[in-house]
Image (cartoon, rainbow, N blue to C red; front, top):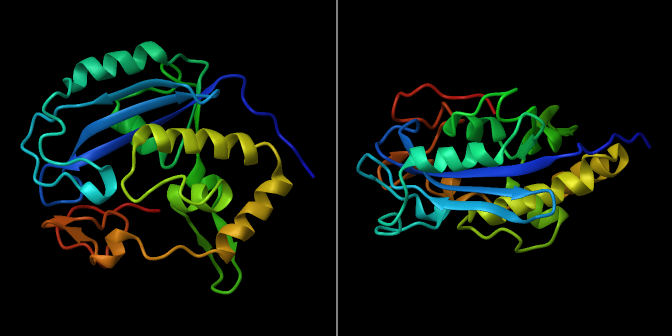
Length: 222
């Protein structure tokens, strides 16, 4: 089977956000983690939002009221993030381009390129003649071990999962194809967002589902 080399230097970066309004695009950075290719946690920081928090999105973030009271200003966390990164580093993660935007990172200055695990593991479903995308929790719990990622996400755990998935499947196309088949066979239960009709505590959670959006904010492609 065809192979490709792992990059010499890579890290996984993960950001969790809280909701500061009803729209699915009103979010504020709350947790940031960076894990290196040896699975060492280089950074795990809480960020104190400037705006009032409407929902901590606890089923997603694990955060509750008061948890961010001792958080640092976003600017100081961003400065730490940028000290860790370099133009040679490849950024790996699920939907990593969103993390890049949240952290105001620039390609060629803070990193060389990105690898989105969502795109890496997307699988063609012959039954429905379309591509299926999977969550990081489904990828980790199916391909690594069950329970790797719980319902309440910790960014450092998520970043470690991303590193392991990247290590194990990026460089071997044969193994990657088998992983995609396994992800298709082992369908996950409905997400908490779907179970709650894409809304939580009055907040729209339908950024990728225009038919479920009630806030009117622009939706995104998968």
